[in-house]
Length: 103
Image 1 (cartoon, helix red, strand yellow):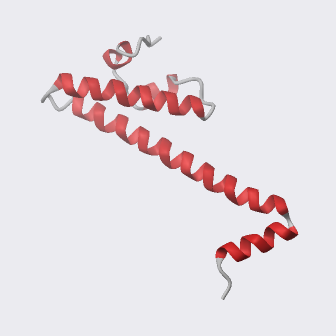
Image 2: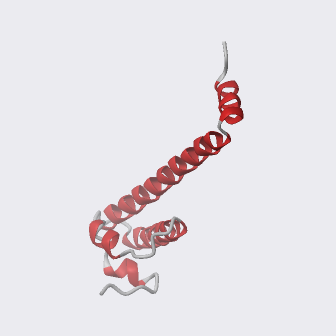
């Protein structure tokens, strides 16, 4: 029985670009998964802010999570964050802690 690696090797011999396409697809899937996890962390921290308990802790968590999310988005080529700020209802006090201003 042929393994997946054997199949990919055969494909690469016939069409070398197919091997890189499979790798690029896997990298894109990993990037999307990682960005989704970063967004989930932002949502969790923002939800913690509205819980009332340990607000300073959650404010710090939210600022760190939003900063990491923005950096990750920028690494993927997304330079504008206004839409996700609105979609995720990121509070002004979280953004202010990043040095950002909501317009």
